[in-house]
Length: 205
Length: 326
Ligand SMILES: Cc1cc2nc3c(=O)[nH]c(=O)nc-3n(C[C@H](O)[C@H](O)[C@H](O)COP(=O)(O)OP(=O)(O)OC[C@H]3O[C@@H](n4cnc5c(N)ncnc54)[C@H](O)[C@@H]3O)c2cc1C
Ligand code: FES
Ligand code: FES
Image (cartoon, rainbow over all chains, first blue to last red; front, top):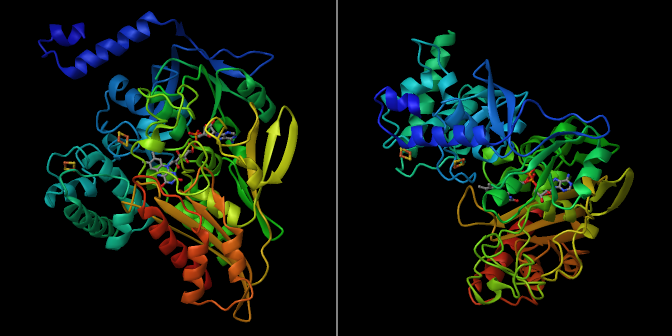
């Protein structure tokens, strides 16, 4: 938080939240590792713990509390703000990320449960200087208005294309049936996924 | 969420011992548990994670002609399982495959689905106290907004059992296995639910520390088929407003065996043996299915806001019976 202010950054809601979570970690006892008891199961006491998460192919060491969700760890600690917090209850799909290749709601998964998994967020789907075909097609089709649902839509669409190179419209609809778009851009999203499928087949040829 | 400690058991018996402690709560994928903790409705001080036992508890495997579904198998696994491809098991695939959303199905476990807390908005609100939540004196839904609540089989609390999978498992005559402090027990699935679903009764009969380890789907004879249908307000995301699972065995065009279980209309998944009996010895027909559906809801007692449920529920029963005999 101090850094942001010194940098002349505005006192944004995000920098405030980051400051608050850092303070919470600072005041709680920081457990270096889970306690492993000889005579009982491993346990993480209340408070903060150092863990590792593999996100977009890179291992990050970070501190989380036992109650930190994967979504909060990604957004507030790792600064990966692509996944959005819409409802925080599994009821909008804005927070969709892939865990071990499957789309899940990061808001209902504890960060501790995401250890030893491969996490992919929307930030990890292209290469530098080479946008993912889905991203290009979402832009070309203007498949968004406010854009809040877009990262989640992209991640659900990505899984659809990974399991079916040439999905029909019904399969796309099924694939994005866990993502809500309050702006009602579903039609264009379906077009964008169809366009991305074509592009990806072209790339393969 | 209030702070809690998080236990990583290495064995079932470690999990069972840890979960027995006051203030401890078992957690599978945690979709329902995290939701409740966020609402501050459930103040567990310790979560015992079952996910470390996934290797042993998440498989779906044929044993003989029957199938064992590990407690930690996900709804997505069940929906796509090759071991459940036979028409006899369709109710399981169908109920798992339309529950919730793709994202939820990718994590939600079979046991967590059957054991999730009722979706009553009074029960799940931290601002309200009710008899089933053990912090109030009466069922608030009985006189409040009860549009999603019971029409059958209720006593002093009108919650409904929300699980998609439970009616399908019951219609197929499944057993379940549990582990408690080193002891394994196998019982018929109906024993998992209270026979008198009073407000102050738990929604299931598991003892503190008792872990559900598997569902056992019995071998199915030739001609066995099952199906699941439900009504809901939205095509995705939503719990059912009424649901029905049916299993029949058909020989030479005649129904030889039948079972029918309703979901989302009573505090427990509700077996309707009298309606099912009407089908036995008969040839499938719409007229027969209409009578069976009426029988299934003959003792319905709708509340102030859910008069639609018996009507819609009967249509769903008629539909599931057509589907299972098609
Ligand atoms: C947006 C949304 C829509 C949904 N729609 C539907 C729907 O249409 N139909 C439907 O059926 N469900 C629906 N659900 C609910 C969802 O299916 C359940 O929350 C999920 O199945 C719970 O599984 P879990 O593994 O996360 O269980 P958890 O949340 O980990 O546990 C749930 C409960 O079961 C207990 N438990 C879990 N495993 C065991 C075990 N092995 N032994 C003993 N106790 C255990 C826990 O202590 C807890 O009380 C929906 C959920 C969301 C978020
Ligand atoms: S924020 Fe996770 S589903 Fe809405
Ligand atoms: S573009 Fe606004 S929510 Fe989808």
